[in-house]
Amino acid sequence: MAVPNSVDPMAWLAEQIQASDPNLLRSMVKTMAETLMSAEADSLCGAAYGERSTQRANRRNGYRSRDWDTRAGTVELAIPKLRSGTYFRDWLLQRRRRAEQALISVVATSYLLGVSTRRVDKLIEQLGVQHILKSQVSEMAKMLDGQVEAFRTRPLDGGPYAFVWLDALTQKVREDGRTVNVHVLVATVVNADGRREILGRR
Image (cartoon, rainbow, N blue to C red):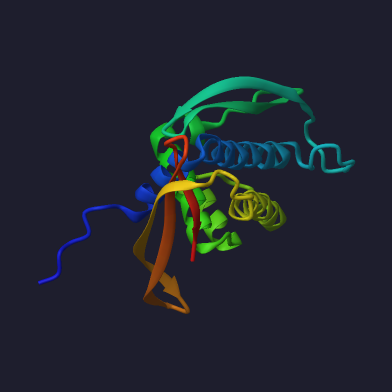
């Protein structure tokens, strides 16, 4: 009889990323949330920030700051302001816990399996954000991919390492219309200062 998986792999990976670099997960969640809000504000205005358009219905008017408490720590969000009317992020405020979980899940999945526009599109759908253009989804995926790649290719100057452990993680994913198992090897270390770090995954 198979033993049921008692550990949520995405939650575990998010914890490992947070433990290795406390600022990484927080900055990735901040980037995704701010990019989503910016894209939503652009759609309300009828044109992108700084773009001239005859369809423009409103204009952006700077940002206001607001703290958002997440499992990754407190994130200071820059929330777009509109010249006339208000921009209310109901997907972030009304369903706060769900929004945070969805953002962290996408960030962890992106680290594990790579960034795809389909995952970002699914996140937007889960959050209930509307009127986001495909080009904006693609831009969000590129930004997240850049942060993930910067983490993966960072110099490993924290050695010598006191402990090194490798852990295998199995995750079911949909691929070409069927469910397959993906196996990932995660390398975690304890450096000379006693801090845990994720060296990488394969």
